Every structure is written in C-alpha cells, then in structure tokens.
Amino acid sequence: MAITFQTDDLSSNRSSALPNGTLQLVAFYDGSGVATLSFETKDTNGALSWTTVKDIPNFSSQIVTKQYTIKGEVPTGNFVIEGVVANGVVDGVAFGLLWRDLSGGYHILRSNGVAKGTTADFVSAWPLGMNNTVFAPRVPQVTDGYARETALAVISGAKLLPSGKHSLQVF
Image (cartoon, rainbow, N blue to C red; front, side, top):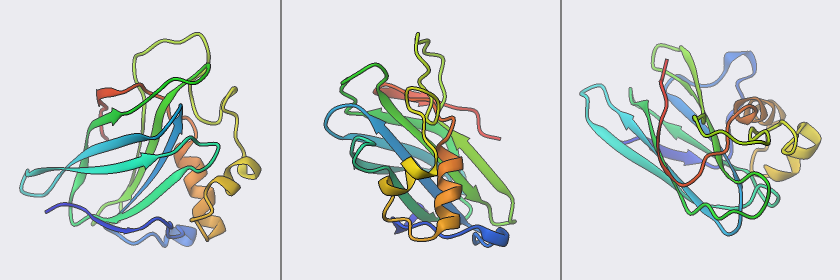
C-alpha cells in the first residue's frame, strides 16, 4: 500500500488532535525554478513505495505543505531531491516530516547531511531566518494557526540539500 494524499492544508495538532496514521510534510526550496522531493516508505509487509512532491517553488513565493494518510507505512529515511539550481549563498531543498503512527506515537524527520558549507544552511537560521511573521504569508494553504505553528517547528532546523540521493536514520 502506498500512502494517500489528503490535502495541502494541515490538520491542527492542538491538544494532540492529529489523527493516528497521519503524515505531514513541509518542503522548503531556495534556488531558481522548481524542485522535486521524493521520499520512500515501507508498509507493514515490508513493501517499499515512493511519494513524490513536484513543482516546489522558491520559498519566497511559497513553502509547500502536504498531508497524507498512512496505513502503517513509515518513512525509511531514503529520499531524492531533483532540480536544484543555485541562485545565491545557500541553495537546496529542506524538508520536515511529522507523523503519528497507528499507535499514536509521534515522529519527526528533518533533512540533514554531511555537506559542509561556510554559511549556515538551515531553515530559520541566518541567512534563512524565519519566525511566524515571515512564515505565515508563505503558507496560505495552512488555514489553522496551530497547524501553521507546528509546520514552522517541523521545518525549522532542516538542512538545505543539493540534488541527489540521500539517506537519514529514522527513529
């Protein structure tokens, strides 16, 4: 089974209201044109599948959010970034995944990597500093203030990565 797209809006987690079996994605791109992010999941039988988010624009116009239903699927930590075109000091795609498993446990996975730069390349740290005043206009699709607050927390600290295949450890 593959995960199922629900909406670009995000459900609020106020009072731990995020439904079990829900995954939320926040994707941030700094670069020219649009980028693509794909992430791998594994179902309860061990079958692997990929979910792809295309046309991620530069964060100055929009930060992408997606909400999915997961039926026991969990991210493996494998992901692919495509289409990054440098346009400045720091460039790449950063993402955060927040999910609540079927048992109600919370998990978070943020992009990270070994690439070394001479400038901080993390979302919400200079030169990509961001608070709610900066973040909110870039996520007009997120209609609930508590959901927007969670989305900012999920993407903050995520590292911008170049095009390529990447892998993270999932806890």
